[in-house]
Amino acid sequence: MVKVSILGSTGTIGKNVAFTLAKEETVDEIVMLSRPESFDKVKGETYDMYDALAARDIDCKLIPSYNFEDIKGSAVVLIAAGIHREPGMNRLDLAVPNAKIVSNYSKQIAKYAPDSIILVATNPVDVMTTIALEASGFSKKKVIGVGNHLDSLRLKNYFSRQININSAEVHTRVVGEHGNHMVPLLSSTTIGGIPLKYFVEYVDLNVIALIEQLKNAGNTIISKKGATEYGPAYAISNLISTIITDTHKVLTVSCYLEGEVEGVKDVSLGVPAVTSKNGIAMIVPIHMSDFEKRSFIEAGNTVRDATYEVKENLDI
Image 1 (tube, rainbow, N blue to C red):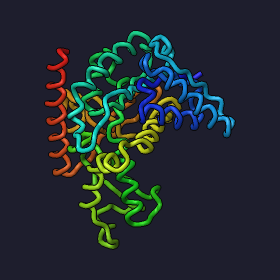
Image 2 (cartoon, one colour):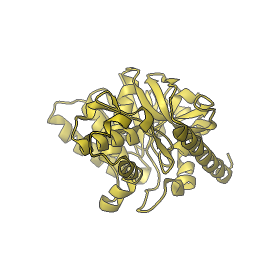
Image 3 (tube, one colour):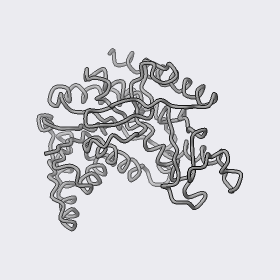
């Protein structure tokens, strides 16, 4: 039996991940953990989801709870709790208050689900990945941030829609910070097997505008509807399914680095990694242009400084 627990399950991301994951039929049981004062709400969410799942004859068990003991035996525990990001907010504006939540929850996971993999979705996710790693005491391969997985999917989508081509023909990746210092790997992007630098000679494709659209994607959606939900929920449920089915896919996730990529260390950043049921199986070597290398190192410096500042405020 495969069990996944979601901390922050009444939030927009948490509840959408639960429902998306239940529909994928890769999980037998999902614990939806909330604060005691939100318990009635999380029960209501499970009732609503059960009605929808019945239409497809899906029997995934949904367990509403406010007791951390219920996460025992989880293969993956998702931390999706935190204060909401408001229009115009930078992800780093959320760092200190959310770090307090992530630190506390990570300690509870270590106590009640010590064999699980911690998946962090709380923003700023790269900073929070390091906070979760240190608070839990887990091996770095077992603490993963959602990171640039969503950014990579967004860029793939933008290229596909811009030139009206099947998204399966687009192979691209975004690394670095899940935020202003993200690094799209344009030098290794291919469309239909053709390197991007050659492909743009034959189509009307404004790459600079696409990158700006990518960097502003979250704020754009939040300004129009108040929150991002479908994109993050699918990206996270896809990542969880990849982990528990042990398919060893290469996904761009936030990992704690110790010099594996361009000598960057003591910071969590988005990098391509082989994901497995045991966590990160390996960090995949990246070929980057000189500009991309400089941008990646800059991202590391920025996130590392932010992480140190947060830790000073938390006294950890």
